[in-house]
Length: 462
Image 1 (cartoon, helix red, strand yellow):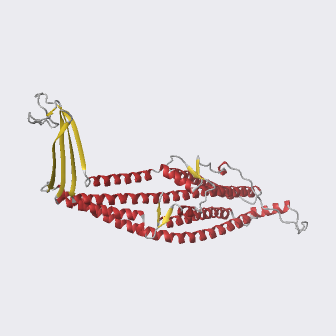
Image 2 (spheres, helix red, strand yellow):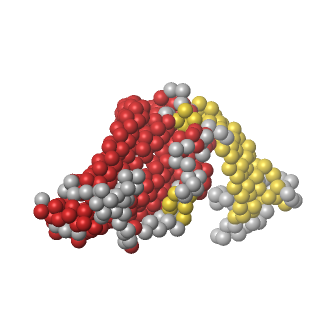
């Protein structure tokens, strides 16, 4: 207590006696240290800032690779459906050409090399060389496998469209999370600088006490150690800020850091997302569940298509053949129409293997649907519960921050008058920094919880 006594003697010697003081004159203000450090400079802003939710969505629509891939999958599914439909529609083909028999120059031949013969007394004779043309038309009448294939392709197209909507929902959720994380990192960087400033002020206070003889070297070293801890938190927080900005840039399709404008209304983000996404009436309407369900239907119809390959098919073919004559222009030599019955006999086990393969695909699709339903149910339940948990955590973090601030204020004042130790000063400062960071984190977690609770049961149409 020797150094505490010396400090009090110095203070009493420098100040007038209590008898000489006017009782109406207030006590002198507490010591206010002035600190200046290069690390207290705010983090530089990102090269690009987003100021609204609409602007953020617009960039994501333009540059999102996941969205482009999902749209390409829809285009592929539409193409497969059109291919399946083509087997049920009429197929017409025309061919034309000029043929000349090099070994028999006086013989007129068609495109297949077959000589064209007509009586010499005919009014029209084939030309040399011979120009000929043929037209054929094929129409399927009974083909159960083709109808099953069309149904499978239609379900696959519906699955691709539902998957596109799910990608839009997930991109919306991921984009909102990245925005919240970026704003949280910005706030954490500010809090770290406030914490460093307070640590520097405590260091200046401890140095002042040491110079007046009220402290010792241990107090100075201990508080300076706390300053270095605060610097480490600031450096780590700035790196986290850079990574959050980079993640936001990648979400927007930009290979650079993207920050959030100070005017961005983060608290109203949930209301802004409601303008983009609509709540579902039932969980089974969620796009990922719909995509899994239609994919199962597609796999089931595909297996039925393979099984229908054992059945016969009936079709109608018609073809016409004509060639040039002298005198011009020409004549139609043949025109035939035929009904064709096609019965599969043996394909070396190809059809049986195809049925087994598609049965396995159907089983996989069924299990995928079951797993997706379980995951979605747990995700929705957890998101709903997390809102209440986050609200409770924000309240407790706010109370803890107020208590930490009061404790730090009292500890600092006690140290100034010689009743507190440097260890208590460092501990109260560290507790205040942690409480402020925890409160900021809990507030952003609450915003994120509300976004998750809404978007886990929503459909987003971009």
